Length: 497
Ligand code: UN1
Image (cartoon, rainbow, N blue to C red):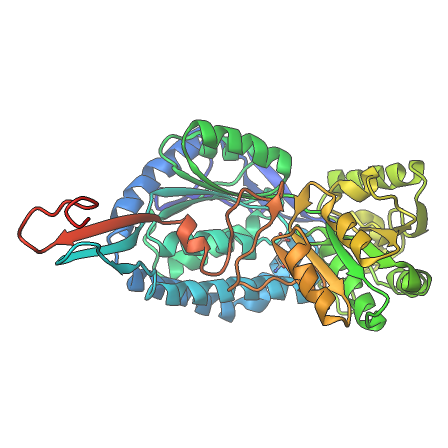
């Protein structure tokens, strides 16, 4: 039996609780990966004490040198890309092409962070007074508590950890309990690349570990990706404790297809957006808004293509769609199928657990669910409004561009949206009017690139962005410096006016 450990205080250690949880392959519950620490508040306390010491030293390491460590991390991830992709697929199910992409997103994030070590721009501006210098610079903040989800087991921890580290902070990582193996390998790589061992702490476990991190007074920065409900409660604690908080939460993303669209391209797009990662992306396409003129033809072709998707072990060539991550997420999907049926939507394909064979065994050993499409979904119904996080696509029929925009915007979330049209004016209107953090034109709702800001409006986020240049502002504090070299007292706003 493989028993894994936490990384706390510069060592791989067993949890103070003495307790563990099992990690199994969601495609085949008979495939046991290992047992991982079910840690508690005492483990978090040790991690924080060590991270505070790590911060004191790391913040004084020059940013270009911090960047050099992250460049080596990128090199090591690249060298081990195939191995990490394979263990990630075994751990959470999505096909190898997608886990390779997940590792690549981490590599991209590492190389971006490495170069940022030679930027971290401040501003120098003219002073309103003579012989006086006015400038701003970026300072690290302290210990950052990072709580990450299962769906991008490598990429999302790197989105948070690499900019946090580059800015000179120390990090406590609490990965989702579904994907502890990938996080373990990431920490091994950070250490191998030369990160001082008290600058990174890895604490495995369930929700109480995250809670202990969020509530710890010596952790001033929290970044969380997950459900809106958990994010709201983290936000309440962080508000009370004056913590800096970045939230990435739910989505109910729509792809709009207008009558003038390239339909083949739009079908490829929605299949990838809705059923890639088994619909378990914050950016997944869960609504398809079709204009009247193309509705029927589009649905017929889409249903045929979705029904032909091959479910299976993501490590095998030919698998299009892997399993859901665990039993409770499949139960949630099943509940929403019932909700859709009871609200009068028409089930066009899927709607049930998959049967058939897997590696000579049965698909029933995993949490497989057939790609599911409902048509006749009413705007405002629960199926249309609520995040499902599974392979369920709701089709809404609209008469006009205006109505398509209204339906897109009329949900509580606002992460990504997509529009297929050949009309450049309408495309630019969509960029302007769709209430989302990201809008794609003639491309699906998924596919954000690591060097661009990532995040959503309304209940998807709290105004911060991951990725790109903006995330470096989240993980650093602005400091302003004035240097008066005139040799006399100069009173701003007074002596010069
Ligand atoms: C997420 O859905 O949680 O844009 C992240 C994408 C990926 C990242 C998704 N690059 O789909």
